[in-house]
Length: 350
Ligand code: PHE
Image 1 (cartoon, rainbow, N blue to C red):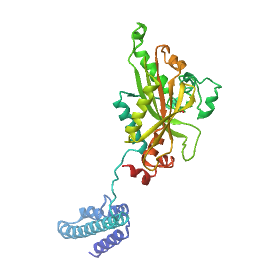
Image 2: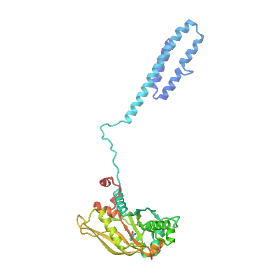
Image 3: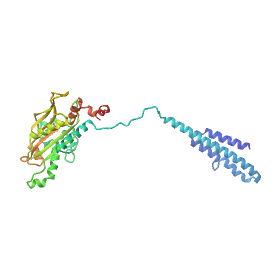
Image 4: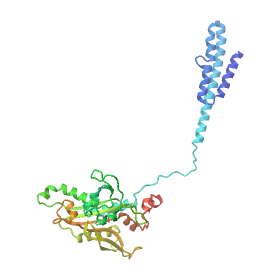
């Protein structure tokens, strides 16, 4: 049975040369497949006598088992080798320190906005939000700032194509358009009462959000935040503005040692107008006047654009800078830090 020995031998050799499972399966087919050499030998036994069949069959079976054993061993060896390669490639350095899942938190400006909303909420103000892409009408014209008004040049912004109500054309330069948007909604809701000569509930709202101007330095960013405030009723005066805003500042900065100054100014949509400055009496900023908001009595033309009779409805508006308030509250001196997204800076506020 020398022939069988050399058959086993050549199978073992071919299996050993197979470098991949696919190659090995091909090699197997040459011996154990349908027309493999072992299979052919089995078929050949048909012509043998019963005696010969017995001894020859047993020998072929042994050879077959030897080939199968070699195949199984080689399969295992290839699988082991593959596993080793994989283990090496995906090696895990168990001595490395674990990765921590950092705790997220609110951005300092978001913390300020939440604070502002909380304080004004407690004074009965609603919170409204509006679009950042605005129309010329809401951003300027409705606010008593017609085309060619010199005040427009202080509000250089980013324009986009379009310019109709359906296709707004600029990034809002302030949150003041929300005065009109919110008031118009409010008036619409109470139209029937107004038409019947009854009075409507007062408009008392703040509108925080993102605003844009072509400006960039340590205290100006092309995108910044504002928070509008508006209170319109039949009897709302400048005195109410002073009370509300003073109250707000003292609560926001948690300090009664804080003085406000209403410095005469100009805005097309308020008359009279005032810049609001605050002065801390103690602490690192003590003694300096710091501008925090623009404000004033809402201009009759603006009240008219709200859909109200300026002879009957009167009130005040203010627009403050939450970024500025955040800088003052935490003692940050560069506005850009808020928008760089540096986690080392931001994580200090958690
Ligand atoms: N919108 C003004 C600005 O951005 C601020 C302001 C708001 C002034 C409301 C008066 C009343 O400069």
